Length: 508
Image (cartoon, rainbow, N blue to C red; front, side, top):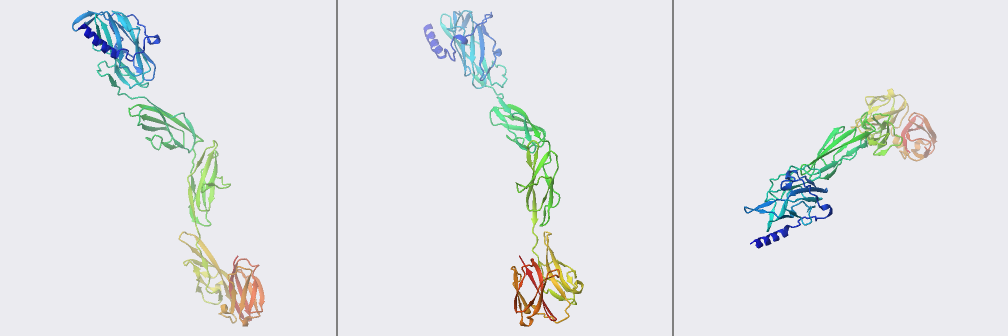
């Protein structure tokens, strides 16, 4: 029977012998202190230090061998005790004793050294210590069954190990404590005033997903306090902090400061009057002045030559902005101002009859387009014309029109006030014809009826000055107008008491 028991024990022992075994040579060995009087294992389980993932660690268990062992109610004297295995160690750790054969005599003192660089799940590992006791026969004993329970605690470098729980029964109990998490916002920064800043962090370790909580400690506000990379507009010295939480509820915080280069400036511009007006108008755009800034005005995002003052007079439709630069080489662009210039209305004016007698009655003026405008000039009152008030000679009348945008334009026409003392042919257009009219060349043709051949011709400008005169000896004559500038002219054909007037226009 003893032989059968011994055989079974040898089979069991062979399964565990040298489990996670370092080997007994060199630095793997330990040296017992030799200070223990009472048989048992030392230190007590609660005093066993924790191992740290990724760090080389060593701990030593010491013991004094027993004198007798109780087996099935009988006491047997121990001849020797052999450590078969120390199992269920975290990955990366191994064990060794101070004896080459791991065998200790009755009441002999020894030690077990656990050493290595662990790399495993954090938690508490219950060691499986198996020993074979020689009491005349070999008996394999589980140390736990004899009341010897040791637990190896494994933590990450950023964690604090809880107290050893020697009442735990499972081989492994995971720690439900926050893991490692580190965050860095980097070194403090300097940035140009008006710069758009994007805050970023470097996260090390931790288990995603991450939750971000940003805070402005001083200065400018953050646009999004829960974004991974929030942004802000830097206008003053500012400092910020971030707190990151991972899925294990681990926390990490860091801060960063931004120094505003160049101080605080007002980078805005404004129009001093309406930014919508008519052709011929303008608006002054201005910025706040500072000795430490230089300026460059831009039109449609392009620099305007020599426009480097704090004000600019805009008279063309488009977008105007101002680029600011400070002594540190920082630049910023102002808000845009859009200027719109309305065109002037197209206005024409042509009198139905451009020659009237001085003694004619007052009449309403017409011929202006678009309708709804106003007439003005000598002899005009409330859009009515009185020839006697205007007086003899050529008079320039003005027609002005204002459109829905408030833009005003005008056109002119000339009326000739005649004494009408002699016979006057009212069918002037049939007696004297001009071609072309308007004239853009250097001459104009004057065509007469035969009864007017030999008449004298005079040409007046709008001021009543004679600019050309000749005698019309043929029914068709060519009059040179090359010396006349563009404008309106009055042509008079005089034949005795008969005076015929025609108006023509010289264009470029």
